[in-house]
Picture 1 (cartoon, each protein chain N blue to C red):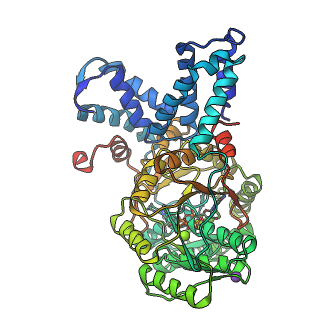
Picture 2 (cartoon, helix red, strand yellow; picture 1 turned 45 degrees about the horizontal axis):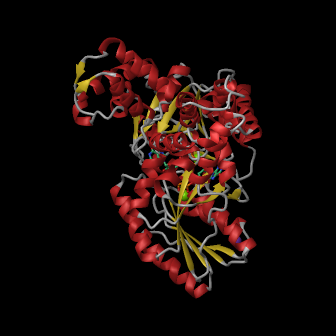
Picture 3 (cartoon, each protein chain N blue to C red; picture 1 turned 90 degrees about the horizontal axis):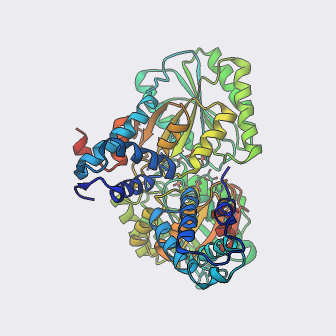
Length: 284
Length: 300
Ligand SMILES: Nc1nc2c(ncn2[C@@H]2O[C@H](COP(=O)(O)OP(=O)(O)OP(=O)(O)O)[C@@H](O)[C@H]2O)c(=O)[nH]1
Ligand SMILES: Nc1nc2c(ncn2[C@@H]2O[C@H](COP(=O)(O)OP(=O)(O)OP(=O)(O)O)[C@@H](O)[C@H]2O)c(=O)[nH]1
Ligand SMILES: [K+]
Ligand SMILES: [Mg+2]
Ligand SMILES: [Mg+2]
């Protein structure tokens, strides 16, 4: 909106910018109000405003920035991927599996989506690409039973890591959520500390419903961290700021495409800049 | 979890009940609440602004002044306005499938529900309208995408079949093969299920446009997630620019999202919403109902 005085109108425009990134009305107005505290009625250029906004957002997101190395830690480390339908769980596992192979970790992928058509085949292709075995049962099999066998196998064969895919489920479906709770319970039978990670996969196009997703999956499965996918599209994924305000959950990775290499560690600074429309060239 | 708009407006108008007339100031307070409610329902901001302006015009008019309960009256204006914007009570939701083989192209972002919706609509056309349907996956990118559609076709009756998978073909080639197979096989309807794509992936958008050019679909449906936030306008606008879209489908209406994306996408494209996806199973498909969606957006 060009260089101008940071008056009420300008603040409203800023708030609109944030709302249009899915940050939600409340958090957007909180952030602009913060900005106003120090800059109200001062002349400020467009870039200065964006930089100031980005730094407000970065400050909120910085504590959530937490890279994770799944190849490290307890053995076998059991990592569960959960989330609503189509958010990118299977693809994210595929990407992580490809990374792990490079690191030389001994991993096992588990096709815990025994419901969706060709979900098993999809994970199997990713396993083949990464050179990591996939444990599966026919469609319709009990997912919890499969996960139990997978952990047993990993313990027996002294594997580093078990990555478990699960079926997509909407958080308001009690029956499907209790199936997920059962998967979690079963892993604990073999290792009281398992699952060591429960990764909630959020789609960047999602709006305010992300908040209810985080709440419900936390409650049912004890989410330990977040991955946000599809940030390569036009969606900015601003709801993550609202999530960060409400939940002290680390954000591990962002998905920026469909290929194995399209997974990046979450960076609060890069995320904040992209959100307010500060181009890549300005960030380096 | 969400306050229904009714409750929110209750407080504002309580003191006014019985007094009759509404000043512009009273209405403005109500409009602020409506704005927040619509934003919480994920209606895109530009659409919210337009809508609020229209509501204001109507609310400050006679209707409210004469009404006994101004709060109820404003809610009615808002609700009716939403129904209107969503295409009205008897929105045209039938598919044009009268010229065999009629092509239906499915497009949208990654993971929006294209493949599942393809099978759901195929089920409906084969069972209700006795159509012979061919399903063709043009998704040569996502692992096991073609297998997924083939498995779904197998779950449906004999009148729904999938085009045999030939490895190594490009989407345009597959589209041509599907049209040919539908002509030879006497199919009434042929679905082209395309790969998911972001609207800024120029190569992929050009590919979709080429498929449409080759196949001349009678219906091109943009399949979108009802849980979509503010991005709904951008996505709808960009797909509408590149493809001869004829309608929208909103999936995952079985979630607890408020579904504001339906309003955003309809407003920016003017396209009818044809179906709502209401589950993972193949019977989870409802004809669009503007009143139901308006009520949902308002949290009623
Ligand atoms: N553009 C883009 N597409 C992605 C990304 N991550 C996943 N996808 C795509 O999104 C779609 C859905 O991804 P999946 O991995 O199948 O999602 P899922 O959560 O396993 O889905 P269900 O198992 O059906 O619930 C696929 O087409 C993926 O290729 C990303 O970061 N960017
Ligand atoms: N709950 C629910 N799930 C749905 C609905 N429609 C589709 N899904 C699920 O959403 C996920 C993605 O659906 P797909 O049909 O594979 O989506 P797509 O658009 O073809 O995905 P890509 O081809 O990877 O871009 C699957 O888990 C489906 O079962 C719906 O209306 N409700
Ligand atoms: K069949
Ligand atoms: Mg999956
Ligand atoms: Mg598909």
